[in-house]
Length: 423
Image 1 (cartoon, rainbow, N blue to C red):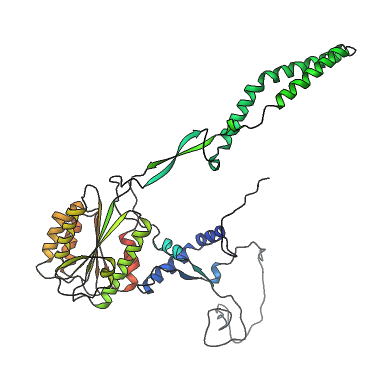
Image 2: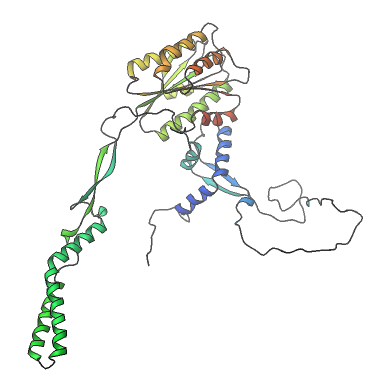
């Protein structure tokens, strides 16, 4: 009989195995709750855990029981209120477990099951099945990225990596090599002793000599150890440099005067989702923040999300600045280039064709993926239609979506970064 002891550290009255099984079983409920929570949360707590409620009808265990079976005929007394075919209304109040304004003196039921998921579990469900599109491996990045691979068997190593099968095989081979001759002589002596006892039972001297020889051979065989340090074999693990994908994400946000505070908040929500997604799923990725109105400026994370600077609208200034940064720091032959642009679509009239030309001729040929998000409840602006023509030339590397209210942020985010099937 084998016993498996789980020595992983768990919190009090908690089981990691049972919790993971529970999360897999109610995945659809949790994903729905996560999707709703993202749209309701403020910018500061968008990545925290969440309280999930599961209807009581979904936590009941299926059971087998005997049904009525067969064909039954029943006669019910008539009444003045109902006739054949009428539907009987469900009793009002009580038993629902969902609360209400009026009390009832009948009915029973169960409340919904409520539990809390951690921040890591919340982010796992939030970014499930998402990935940067068209990510390809370029060059090795430094020497600090390694992966451990099996490199055969060694006679020296760490005791935690001992190979039991190979060690026992080596021990068995050693015992055969050291005691094989003695075992063969032992078998021959035992057969001779048995034959001598049958044919010459009175020849005690020869019988005693064979018994002494057999005892000597057995002692010699027993002196061969069952397992020796010479037999131990270990799994050899070597570290190999792992190719890393060098990627950079440009975040372009419109902060012009046409962007209302509500529009800016939705843009910030989108970029916070993107930032959490990148930092959680990719170890080696750089993020470049660019704010623009009539002029564009590269800023840090703090200024990108909290600066109150505003002005007119010239989108091409951000595209030109991004192109300059690419030429200076991020060679397209070595880096995977990504861009996420958020705007309300308002732009100086003569600037939208310039943006279209910059994207077609200079930026998109080097881009792995470019996504444009227009945050407006109105009809699309001129910038949207200019970008549509860009998307026709680069259908696999360009995408655009519209956000009308905060509830659209997470669904749009999933559409833009949904993991694609590779062919």
